[in-house]
Length: 115
Length: 113
Image (cartoon, rainbow over all chains, first blue to last red; front, side, top):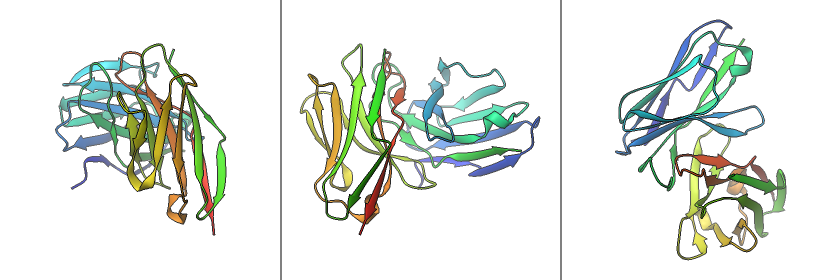
């Protein structure tokens, strides 16, 4: 069974559209994350949820809205997509949201292409 | 502030040669350090981590890393490279609050036969 799964794997859409990416983890972890990997492969944290509560919200346009219906799921909704949103988005999870991150498990990524 | 610097965006070795990927960090708190590997079109896989205790850490696939506080380094090594080791490698440190990872810019490892 896949530990951290994301859907879809690929997403191609036009500017101005709204899209969602879903993430699920079956590791029993209490903390989930969204990272963005740009075209130069640089990874940066976007959001973090611990027990369904937002604990990190980096400088991300408010067009991006995470939603955590339960501890095992963290979805990312993006409104009014722009060309610059094209990237690979990774979901991750770990046990222990406060204190030290002792190792995060990553999903396979969603490659978003905005045309 | 927390940061990671990976020296060398691209490292090329021959099969069977020593692999050395360099990582230096800056941390205002005792750091937890990580190495991840990313194969083409895949997610990140945790290779190894240093939290506390022994400074020489062994990971998967024959990799190991040594935490050197005096040098603020956490270099990744493997005695003998395999073709299957060709991938992108990322060093990371926890942020100050310990709630997320700060990644380096990555090092692409190429292995030739």
